[in-house]
Length: 286
Ligand SMILES: Cc1cc2nc3c(=O)[nH]c(=O)nc-3n(C[C@H](O)[C@H](O)[C@H](O)COP(=O)(O)OP(=O)(O)OC[C@H]3O[C@@H](n4cnc5c(N)ncnc54)[C@H](O)[C@@H]3O)c2cc1C
Image 1 (cartoon, protein in one colour):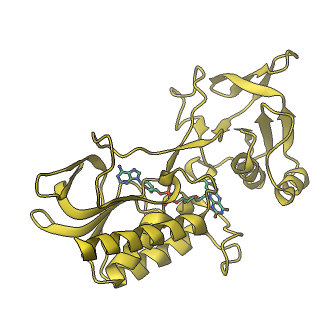
Image 2: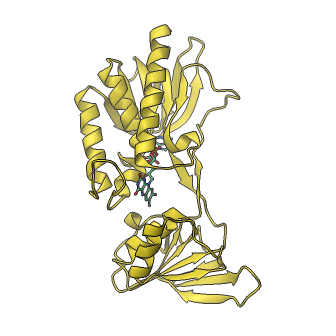
């Protein structure tokens, strides 16, 4: 892979990157996709994908596997590697340093790196990450017979709490605000699953087996027994590891990395396709 100049390099193998890879490869462009962790991105961790048209509740992982093999059938090359530095050389090519594979060059670059979960910034969170603290249920070990606490007031937190209720002995959903920003179907599921809602609290400290909560409106603080804590208080787009001030020609962003507020598999896939079509226009004109 070294030495050659790819037509396009895609960083990130979630729905946006995979959809872009399929379109570019099918259009005949020599395209390499670098994914640092798991093909399918966040979508590969969705247990039951109920709102993707034509795919009634199957696992996100299976859908993403199909996207990947379809793209590979059209010639997409893939590498499990992380892009650590991006720059543009004097010949107008992008140069991307991959952690394991070294530098690769491409005429167009598509950044599909997704969005990262925001952290609480409370004592214990960082130290206990991966042991007691996670962002999503698919990262955590078995919760059978254990107590889980989900922190967050939006749809992602509500969805996570409802999904965990089938795996844990007890699930709390802790939110700062009085009302959850989640649609009715989810709210109904939380109640049906017996999730205990604790509005008006924020995390103050996480300890192994315990979550200390501070009352937001001046009420009484409390402490929960919790074997596993899930933090879903929002996300922020992952930034391109580049030194440039303004994105150069031939650079495109797609999916959650694009600052998308409606974070959905279908939206990210569609945005990946749009970025690929723009990249094709660029490559044809270049
Ligand atoms: C718990 C949860 C439940 C969800 N439920 C639903 C749902 O029911 N329905 C729905 O439509 N959507 C759902 N979503 C949202 C959906 O999964 C995302 O919106 C979608 O996956 C975004 O796609 P993306 O390709 O933009 O980003 P991502 O899926 O985040 O993929 C980005 C990829 O880029 C990789 N990457 C980042 N930086 C680098 C780098 N430097 N080098 C190489 N690779 C890199 C990451 O490892 C990742 O695999 C859910 C999300 C979560 C977390």
